[in-house]
Amino acid sequence: MSFANLLGNERNKRILQRLLGGGRISATLIFAGPDGVGKRQFALAMAKAANCQKAPAGSLAVDSCDECAVCHRIDAGTYGDVTTIQPDGQYIKIAQTRALADEVYYHPREGRQRFFLIDEADRLREEAANSLLKTLEEPPPTSTIILITSRPNSLLQTIRSRAQRLTFTPLSVTEMEKYLTVNYPRPAPDTKLLARVTEGRIGQATAFDLSAYRQERQALIKLLELLVTGESRFRLLKAAEHIGKKEREEFEKELRLLMSLLRDLLLLAAGANPESIINIDVVERLEPLAAQIGLRRLMIWSGKFDEVRKRLRVNINRQIAMEATLLNLAEEAG
Ligand SMILES: [Zn+2]
Image (cartoon, rainbow, N blue to C red):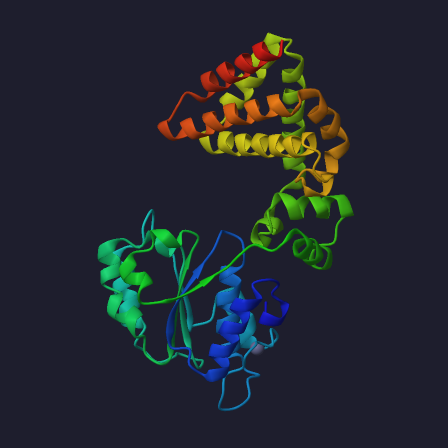
């Protein structure tokens, strides 16, 4: 995508286009921000603008055409002057950074400007980072290095001090709805839900499985409906088993979904505007449930499930934790 077609993070767009316009893009940049907000897309847009075949002679374009062979190849990841480095296993290894440090000093192979994108740059360990410091400090005029990270605070201070940092933020719900409506048309309730559930992260939205989400959510709403009656210990144990048996990652996902439902219920019970909830497509079902559980209990429940979430760090038995929590809440209800 060209800058013109990228949505959001307008300030970063202006900064990068100003760098391109001034022809001074020998730099080390940090693109920081949550996953899926477009950091990589911005890096590619910059590489395309700098190498686009339709650039005016003697200067760099401030945006790409998105149509020429170079733009296409950069998008496809087959252009010789755009290199991406990713962690090899858990970390970016010193062999990778040494190779990069050599490579940076070569002239462009085919275009005007070389780009080196370091994905998950927070996974650079000290010795690997040290081998790069000189390079990051002052890359040659024809090389631009972009460190991409969702955890900028985990970047080593020695790296941070050598680079210019740009922070990327998610889109607002309204911006996201607009973007999805234009680029991925679907029924309006789906668009509204997707914009909210992905919290403005475009990267997440394109791969999000709405029907799987709705299915899991349906089961959790049923669980909350069961819990509020305080009856059927057996069915609660079954539910605890079903959730508790999931692999850790899936279990965490389930808990996050449960917490987001509880947050919605809290908002509704507190009389907030229904437009402010995430699960806006099932508001008719959540409203009576919120009234039935009531504000006080919703706060207690949120607290209890949040405790389970926190205790996951110490590797608890997930099934037992769910059983204990659900039975405990049901007893209070009954
Ligand atoms: Zn082009």
